[in-house]
Length: 557
Image 1 (cartoon, helix red, strand yellow):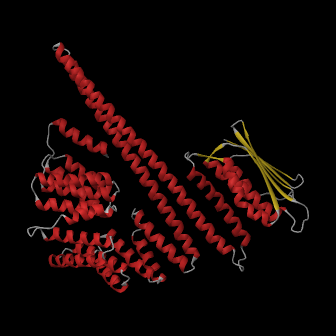
Image 2: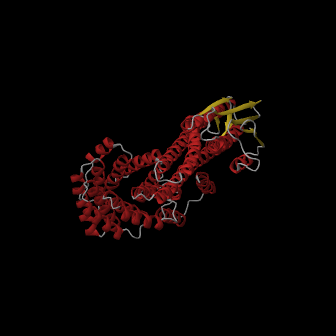
Image 3: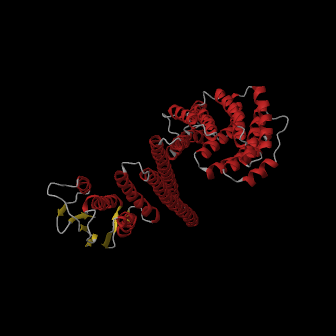
């Protein structure tokens, strides 16, 4: 998008034409429409197109700049948002517009509040007071944001005072959106004070006013459902949460959906409704993963586009200077020397710019690796939560599915162990197979010791791909569980043994050998899951009865 924006403005400048007001109005209309539909990335793009199309610094320009800053903040581009707000303060001072200076500083204080920089927010708020000549809307927004600040730091009496003052102005001037925002803020304040009836009344007022504002309506609806959750009225909380989720299922508001799904899952578990608890927990994890991955991919794509665009711009500037240099060579030697100095200076600037951009790209890639690691950590933690919940069901005396649940637990732990390895490894495309299988065996050891089964293992060091490692882990897990369930006679007095061995064959493949000294398989028996897992990695395998059960397979790297 940055490249397209730069190209549009570049073409206009080259043609020597000014962008007409019709095009500017279209860009602003598009920006407003995308903002209403909560697509703040596109809204910011069209706001930027408008701003780049004009050199006229007036009140409209600064108002649009403030809207761009809001879009940047909502899309978590906090560094750019802060710089944009500071720019609005500077420009407002240049055109000597007191009300815009005030509005810009209110935006700055609110930005500091939302980004947890409370001391800075307090410093800004303590230095600004609205003048009597300011519009009632500006005064109303100031009072509401100051109330939000006091609510944020826990000074609830002050938050109520400023909210009520803002509400008087909003009702007097019929500012519907502001009234809805203030009622929602008051609901949050009384929720903190545990005055739930008042909180519900304020949330209902807000819901009535913002019913045509889908995202704010959904946020308020979530706040109302949380009141019932805090009151331990879990069925009613779930009812409202499910309705809310249904209302926004067509949107891409992953952050809001995650909050709704998390509370729905918790409420379901508290009602001992494990089935729906797991269902909403799985949907929450899926939505959260999509949210993290989409933000990672979007951030990388935006930075790469910006980097390539600036490279192209630098190349254009460089080419122009080369042409100038060639013309200057036809003149005096002195002029040629000056042209050479200019070229060297520009080359140095270009080199410095590219170097800085490379550093930024490198930093972003490191942050991406961190986010991927965090995603693996979250997945591992959620899998462990599922293991704990299944284990709780398994340990109930009346549970008839003990073996089936044990089988499920070991498979989930196998995958959780893989994500733990991915989290602690710097390299995210492969893991140390020896470490992974050793940890997997340690997880299975309590089950083996409970049946007096000895486990020996001989594992070579090697790095193995993530995709195939998960299948190796599941194959090994299934073999051990089969030995536990079917391999040994219950009252046998002989020593029960399982041996696991894999060899690194010239860094081209691994050979996995598994044996136990149990009763083996009959000729008609065939482990279906083992066959399916081996076929997934295109591995041939051998099963024999050699003083028990014998399994061997070779898996290519």
